[in-house]
Image (tube, rainbow, N blue to C red):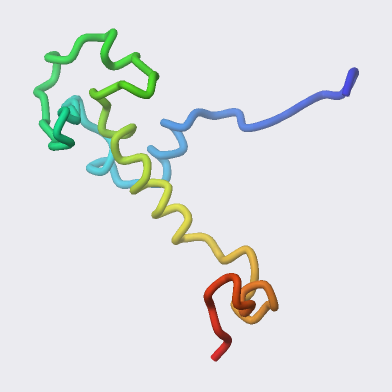
Length: 102
């Protein structure tokens, strides 16, 4: 790989989301806090510490809306794309997939 010019995306996750998704699903100064009992509290802007928002560990419990809605955004993106294979391919209709061809 030495000597190869490697290229990739020249953008950020936030810019891609801003381009593709309506603002109300990601653009907010409010913070989403997931409590110990898995309930959710919406915190007003400025009430979460920068350290809490920068915590990327598995124990993080305060998130920007764009982070909290990641699975929603990912699901919408996946839903809007074409399937990677046709539903009539043998892999789709095989019994291990749990699908049966009509």
